[in-house]
Length: 224
Image (cartoon, rainbow, N blue to C red; front, top):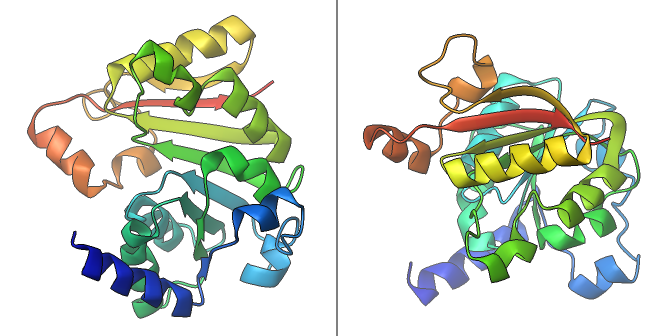
C-alpha cells in the first residue's frame, strides 16, 4: 500500500464514528474516558463485550458482529490503515455492534477496566518464533496476565492460528500454569465437532492457508 493511500485511510478513520484512536499518553495517564464505559458510551447497551486482538483488516470482528447481533465487538490493532477496511464495511453495511480501537496490545489493560470484557479472540498472530521475540508473543505469561485483568472471572480466550508452533507453545504454557483448556484442536477443518464460529468465519489469509493445505488450529481457554 502506497503512503498516499495510507494517509487517505488515516484521514478517513478520523471521520468514522466506529473508530477510537486514543494517544499513548491518554491511556498511560488514565485519562481515557471510555475505560469502563465501552458498553454505555460506544454501544449504548449492556450486551457482552468481545475483543479481537491484532484484528488486521477487521474481517473477523465484522463477521462475528454480523453473526452475533446481541454481542458487542471491538477489533484492536495498531495499524489503522489495515482495519480501515473493516470499519468502512461496518458503516456501509450498518453493523452497529462493532467498533475499532487503534492501540498497542500491550496497553490493553489501560484501555479497558477490570472485569469489563467477556471474551477475547486472537486470530492468526505473528508467532514470533525467534527466542528474542518471545516477549512479543501474544499468549506469553505477561500478556495473559494483562488479559486476566480486563476479563470477567468467567471470561473466555480464543486462539486461532495457522502456526503449529504457536498452538503447541500456548498449550504447553496453559497446562504448565494450570489454566483451564476448554477445547483444543490442531486441525479444525478436518475434525468433526469444531465450534461453528471457528469454521464458519474465514479471513482472507486463512482461505489462502487452506488452499495451501495448512492446518488451522484452535484453543479455547480460561485464565486462572
